[in-house]
Image 1 (tube, rainbow, N blue to C red):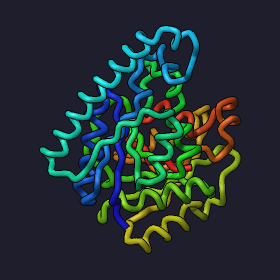
Image 2 (image 1 turned 180 degrees about the vertical axis):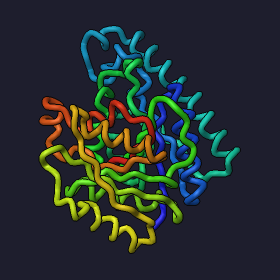
Image 3 (image 1 turned 180 degrees about the horizontal axis):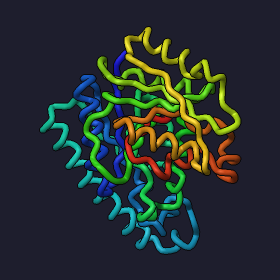
Length: 286
């Protein structure tokens, strides 16, 4: 089953263009409907993200509050005009949604009614509004739908021809692989990779990803099974990203937060490291 309904999250940043190019390419390929989603809270200055929070010190200055919100709405109007022009120029069916409600709840609710949400990686050089500082993580844990994450640098207009799947025997990995099936092109090269740590490797005569590679082949996917062993302090996330670079992958598919989010935040984890260091688009599901 192909993608029929896509949402791209827009915030007026310099990365909107890259997100839109990828979303438009997917919409064209699948003859899908594309919605531009623009939450009001993403448009506030970083130190004004509490504008909708009912804080007395802000609402004691109603003129100031109205000015900040007015500027955000004006910015949304510019983003909308650009989005609609792209839809018109590219001949893509779609619509626009401006969302004034609470950021996480409203975006998660919208993601639950789409096939795929395209969203940008957090840029470490740009401070977002406080409510958005863990936006991807919050959506992964609440939306129940896959996210297509676009790195904060680079252009990525086509994906799905050379795909790397980071595989573990977990619910999250299984979900991500199946969520990615519509994106994988019919003649794509797909590598299903498991990352093992030195001293904890599986039987040398077997490849842990052989079963999922065989399953994908029954969907008409040319999938090969592979494994790599991590040593010398290299993290599993770095191993995945290095392998993706070496094989020229245009998409990385991984499950998000196989361990608890709190544990990963404290001890580190693959999800957190990939969110920080991705260099190609990542499809992630939880």
